[in-house]
Image (tube, rainbow, N blue to C red; front, side, top):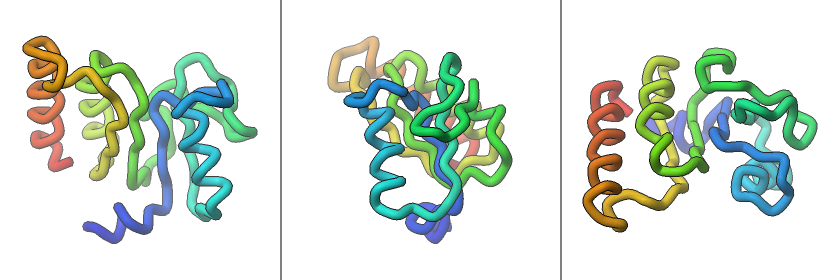
Length: 123
């Protein structure tokens, strides 16, 4: 199970962006610049392509076999994205977002929600 985390064949970036200095762009740039040989799937509902790679509107639109998802989206969107990842069969998620338990009761509720969804799918 850890093989697919540490040596993924396909990585999706939910919140990928064409904005050069955004985290969603830098994650993709780093995968390319550091020689990642697998497939990269940028996920952004309004982007056609990012860094020359075709973008997908949702993780559900990506081809099967995504090993790792890197999320760089606002906290309020994370629970649904985790649910979509579970439906897609993704087993590893990296969440690069703030706004969870560290921000108070509302963020803690969002965190609890996405953790319950992740556990339901074995993520």
